Image (cartoon, rainbow, N blue to C red):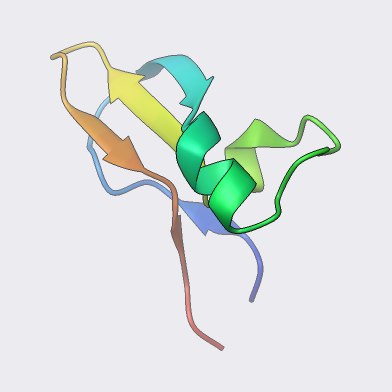
Length: 58
């Protein structure tokens, strides 16, 4: 299941936002708006914990 984003922070995700400086630096922009699987995505859960999307290794 490589390429599937896994969540570092536990709980229900209530917001996803782009870490634009990182996305620009890594040349992820322009993107296909697939925030759930993008490394530049920051997810926030119901407890307020924030973390980048983590990719599982092959």
